[in-house]
Structures are given as C-alpha cells and as structure tokens.
Length: 77
Image (cartoon, rainbow, N blue to C red; front, top):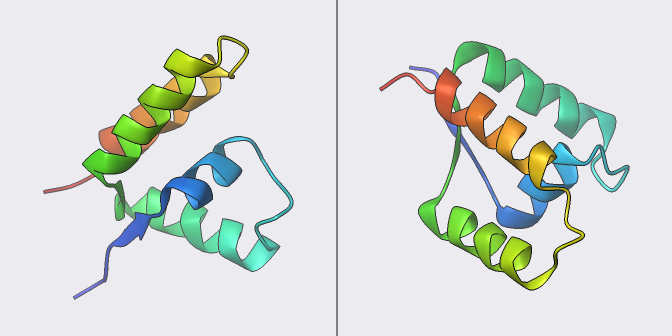
C-alpha cells in the first residue's frame, strides 16, 4: 500500500510559491505523490491559509487556489 503525503501548512505554501526553502528532493517527492493522487492537506491548513489571505490582500491567491485545486482534484479516496 502506497503511503499518502499530508503537507504541513508551511510546506504547502513553500511548494505553491516555488520557495527554495524546500530541497529539490522534497519538491520531487511532492510532485511524484501528486501524480499518484497521494497528496493531501489538512482542513486546518486550508483555514490557516484563508486567514492569511483575509489578513493580507497582497497574498498570491491565484497560486494558492491553483495548487489547492490540484491537490484536492488529484486525491483518490
């Protein structure tokens, strides 16, 4: 059984924004799991990002929406 990968809020944000804080091996692992539909984000992470977007109007909303949709859309139950 292949394990699922649940992204921490910071990792999710770093991944979305292409932040170099994440090593290439980590980004590659996330992309691989995304292709398998094995990446998830917790409800609290979605809430935290919602609070960030609400607080900061300059936050890159479209990027967050795109990756959130990509993660949720690829998840196989």
